[in-house]
Picture 1 (cartoon, one colour):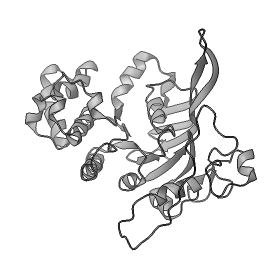
Picture 2: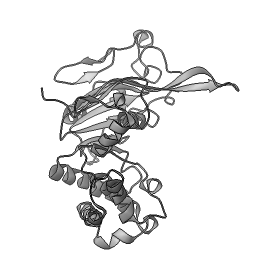
Picture 3: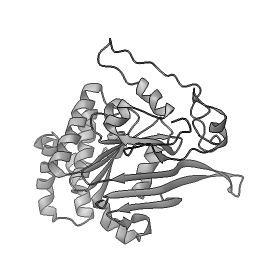
Picture 4: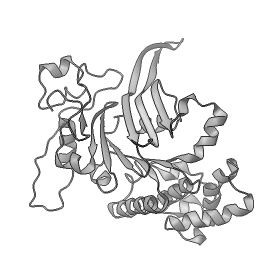
Length: 321
């Protein structure tokens, strides 16, 4: 087996819950609770789940924007959480993040060209005289025109601003891009354009993506493998076609049942989950999904299911699968 570009092993991120004037810790919000992911070079791994399942925290902890509680994150064989601040700074250009809301990620008083090129200067990757040319190349690669370079963020549409966010990550020539819900705020037609842009850039530049989304219909068109998260834990991972053909976990089945069917005559049984996602500060015992699972039995509340290989690289954590 070749060396993975990114290897995440048993990653945990707990946020303390404090109380009183002295800030005494009375509990923890288990935002990420024992997650493992492996990405090969050139692969796109989709991470899906409801809002509050911990997907974004996984992405930020992988990039060390927040410190881990436990586990390890290896990028090209190097545990990034063991690096010093200066060593981490040298690695930053190789790992980039694309935000869900590009407008909040852009300074409204900074022209787009300066926003895209500033990281090149901050990291000393090229002389100042070459920055404008590289910015123009990045804009063109992302479907924008040269005259956009001197405009401000408020002069662009939502789709154009997301292209700017992609260009800002792309200009550093990264190996890994973590895209955190990059199309969820866009119209459906614009979503398709951005997904196609991600695909073209991957083919032309050999990029590796960790694509975070709550929408399985989006990751179906871009991802080669998919992981399903629930309440901070991974409940199922499989190759895209295998997951859509034969989902094993009841939560995955419920998510897939909500995906619109392109042909109206092909009806799909809709699985409606009862209740809301529990609090990660006080997760249920046993299988975290048992409080909403329509197939739960006694063992589901008593024992934590083992995340096991069901065959052919299809992993699931469920007593009934």
